[in-house]
Image (cartoon, rainbow, N blue to C red; front, side, top):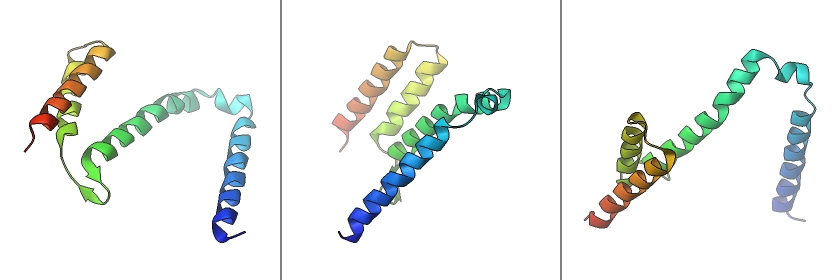
Length: 103
């Protein structure tokens, strides 16, 4: 076995151990109000970071392209209390429109 396989096996063991430890946490710690409020924000923060990284960067460079317009349109639609499918369609359409007519 080469080093790559040892890395894959080691990483797999580490991930399994983390998942097992996460499932083994007693309920009394998870039911604390502060932990519940933090857990509610974790998906929001992760999705926001993913959107930011994919919209404003390419490998190691910062950039602004057609996806920034889609993000701006989505923010405006959310401010106007539009339903989620309308937000997604408006953002995708505006981003595709700019991408199509970019030089």
